[in-house]
Length: 236
Image (cartoon, rainbow, N blue to C red; front, side, top):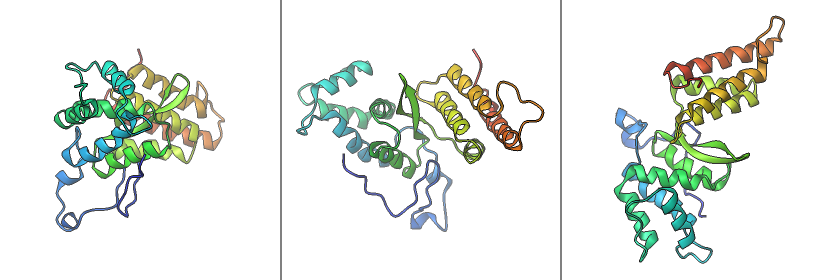
């Protein structure tokens, strides 16, 4: 896979420090987003990212991979098998929701921290997308998926836990991913939220716990309050 050529900017999960010249003195709220769907300015970069996953080792379209995608996404009408890869690219151009499904599908082949996952997240971050690449556990292994970007108070609350307890932070990220992914799993999000609390406090917060445990519990409580605020996580 080609390395994505990025401008000299800092790319984090939620922050892009670069702003075009026209947006520095007279910024418009529509520029920053977050933007729904897959706007046109991200389409070509996204297509270039997807294409290698649908090719064989010689660079030709992989009928096996394209068929698997067609079946898994229940494509109706299906791809044109005279030029299946071109057909896929055309469908992505015409349908933003379908493009996101394709990205999410391909991300399931990517492990967190890989170049492919980084490149896709960079495209989404630089383009101001509401979506980001998030880790997800699949059959005991770590893979990636699309999930809604945590912004504002939610992002700050989750990030505040990271320096205190990495395991609890990982559970909170997993809860957010299950909650806001393309295929939400509220029950799974609830279980991850409970695990975040149990990591630092056990099943019950007890008098006499260490200050570190108490601090972590407070930060997690704030993070969970942000997650529960929208009424998204429900125990079922």
